[in-house]
Amino acid sequence: MVNKRKKEEQTSEKILAAARKVFTTQGMAGARMQDIADEAGINKALLHYYYKDKDKLFETVFLQEAQKFFPKINAIFNSDLPLFEKIEKFVAEYIDEMVDNPYLPWFVMNEINRDPERFMYHIWGKNNLPKPAKLLEQIELEVKAGRIRRIHPMHLLMNMISMTIFPFIGKPMFTRNLGITGKQFNEIMEQRKKEIPAFIMSALKK
Amino acid sequence: MVNKRKKEEQTSEKILAAARKVFTTQGMAGARMQDIADEAGINKALLHYYYKDKDKLFETVFLQEAQKFFPKINAIFNSDLPLFEKIEKFVAEYIDEMVDNPYLPWFVMNEINRDPERFMYHIWGKNNLPKPAKLLEQIELEVKAGRIRRIHPMHLLMNMISMTIFPFIGKPMFTRNLGITGKQFNEIMEQRKKEIPAFIMSALKK
DNA sequence: ATATAGTTTAACCAAATGGTTAACAAAAGT
DNA sequence: ACTTTTGTTAACCATTTGGTTAAACTATAT
Image (tube, rainbow over all chains, first blue to last red):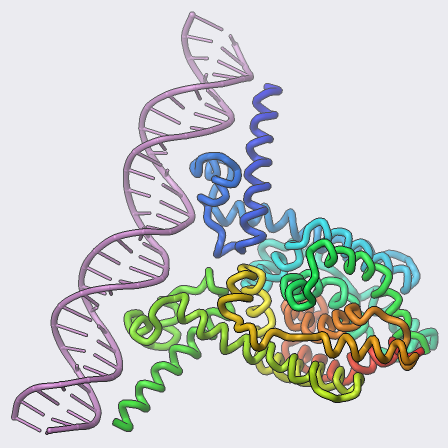
């Protein structure tokens, strides 16, 4: 029983890893079941033994990835940290995650764009939808208290998220056009963990 | 002869418009030739009469789109405008383009990600590669002259591009999670034409 | 009117692709 | 030992999909 379970899990894991690799680079439409099987070093039929069909396999992978990507938002957004610390934490945690997992944001955004309805209602449970309300209120409060420059909270939110995530989506473009290596890119992202909060802080100062 | 030419161009145009619609929403891999034919209201064989194969059709559409998206960068980056005006112009022109064409940035980024080599060497001529060098030097100069806060030019560049483009890539996410309509989204983007330069300006002030 | 050249279509084809089947191997349960 | 369940494979199947062909249609030139 022990060996079987082990083997079973190994295969299942191998498949998921392979599927993750193929799906995240090729997208749902571009991914081939045969490629996933090859990548996992198994027969194509075995894929269907573990995961009913392409849709199911994709959903499993996507959900796993999306859960790395999104729920973190809520935890930070709804925490009781002061605004600036919240921003620092959000930026740092996201960049760490994405340096380890550079395809993640592209993959997730990609599939949301392809079929927003399916994503929102079917794949994403209503539970972990990011609720930025608290953060937005917090910003509004700081503005009203006169502690930061007047800014519409939504713009600040968009600025923060954009500066954090976009470089990873545009990575091929940036590395190519700036003439930098992947390693240098990661170093720059590392710097951004401090640079972005400093930039925002400076922009908000009255 | 006149009518014939007219007809020819009409069909060719109809095909391109249909192809643009299908490719930009489904991506290269997800697009079906039959769907494009249907969308254009013609027979599938006629597609191949005008455009040899899927690759050629895609390339035509992609090139058209990419040329809307990128060459503008160079014109602005290499102009002789003062730094802040450059930023203002970049942001405003891009947002205008993307409001009219919201799938553009996602589509372009998507296909660059899928196959960077093909994109860079085959599709993209060496001519119109964005050359940010001049802008980067300009920023460096402002820093050294002490007119703006110390910042690595690359970060400033990334911040500007990110804040401008990302909201369009994340549009489905933003509209859903912020509970806004497409119209409201566009209004917010309209505001950003002033908000982003102001934000950057404020961040750079010493 | 008739030939000609360009345009459009229905029917067809071959390859790719997601998915199934039936047989076999390896463990686990008895 | 032997039966049952689980894991794995090779071969196969049905559908989808990109692409072709040959015939029909249309407009123009002679």
